Amino acid sequence: MAGEQLQVLNALDVAKTQWYHFTAIVIAGMGFFTDAYDLFCISLVTKLLGRIYYFDPSSASPGTLPPNVSAAVNGVAFCGTLSGQLFFGWLGDKLGRKKVYGMTLMMMVICSVASGLSFGHTAKGVMATLCFFRFWLGFGIGGDYPLSATIMSEYANKKTRGAFIAAVFAMQGFGILTGGIVAIVVSAAFKSRFDAPAYAVDRAGSTVPEADYIWRIILMLGALPAALTYYWRMKMPETARYTALVAKNAKQAAADMSKVLQVEIAVEQDEAATEEANSFGLFSREFARRHGLHLVGTATTWFLLDIAFYSQNLFQKDIFSAINWIPKAATMNAIEEVFRIARAQTLIALCGTVPGYWFTVAFIDIIGRFAIQIMGFFFMTVFMLGLAVPYHHWTTKGNHIGFVVVYAFTFFFANFGPNSTTFIVPAEIFPARLRSTCHGISAAAGKAGAMVGAFGFLYAAQSKDPGKRDKGYPAGIGVRNALFVLAACNLLGLVFTFLVPESKGKSLEEMSGENEAEELMESVAPNSRPPPV
Image (cartoon, rainbow, N blue to C red):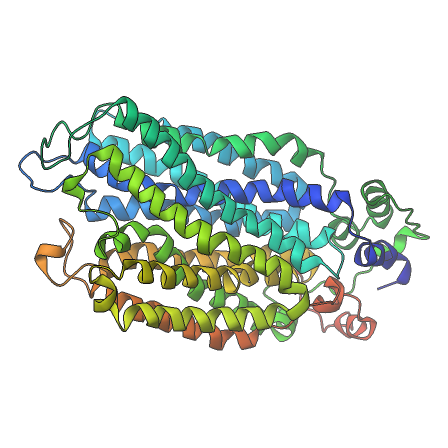
């Protein structure tokens, strides 16, 4: 690839960290803040939905969502996210990152509000409407994964690129934390205004009619941060790497980056950008030879991680109840239960989730992606086994604090580990014209793992003892054995990490081979290049 065309890319690689980089982190990061808030806030209100819409006056325990409804409410957003990652990832490579970026944000805003306005004359009608809007909410969230990662990687310099992409992803931690805080504030406000007896005292009176507003307010507030950043997202220019390498307009790329980075970038000839080399498609032999194992590595590690990560996040409330950290449901009213669940999840987010993300930001460009991912998977395995092996000890009265500490450490090493690196690496190691697509494929594999966690753990964690089992569920393998399965997933993730290359300190073109002239000449030799896909 000619030197003139690379001037703009070299300028990006060596650019000093400046104000524009931080504004890009905030603009892209607020999308992730919203993603995490919207995906995880549902776990705060599912018990409340069960009490409101599936109340059985003859039952000694409060209403709960039937197994199929609970699986749908918890998992339908992941189905949408998986679809959105594949679709918008592909679209981002076809139309450009910027054009697609606004679509995903508007979809998230509209569907967040619509989720809170879910209507219906029957419980089934309300749940069906909620699932419909949460699917399309997930579809918009899915688009944010490949686009935010790709945009940030293509704006960043090579020295601090890992930290910048990690900082965008770290906003997910603040999204989870904010979801918990919002649920605490809203439930506390309703609790002080509408005091109600515990379920054991008054079955019907324990859930006041006004409780129906709580879950709706919590879901709808997810639209706010996304709406606030829409204007700035639309003002961002297209990334220089897309403009130069995919749209073949080096002059425009130089002009765009000169404005935002406040440096003069000269391009002597625009024709250099029209180079035909290196144009193999996603399904070509050349791609399989160069990047096939890399894609297998990024997809499998993300898949295995998300089985464990989303199981833990979505079903914290069940684990807390199992170890008696949250009182029995019948001893609380509906609003108090929301408050207790939110408080427990916020404490875990504050102690384990958020710090882990920022440790990654601090150390990723020092010790590298590979070392952090290996370390994260290793310690997640260790701490999962630390929960599972002495599980009886943790469920004994007086030992709950120890359980929560070990549980928080599994979150810490997920986020100071593979939860961050699986997001970062696919945005760095693939060619510019396939980068968004490959990131979308890797992320979609992760969401497939999240669905296994969301649907599978729900059933697997059920006790063999009918008295301890949630109503309507078949016998499972119990929380202890489910934790063993999650530990095995983490161990497998560690093994597949060896397929993923280290990208610390290297330019994107160096990682993808886009600036290797000899390889480029080979790839355009007569009859040797498959047609682009």
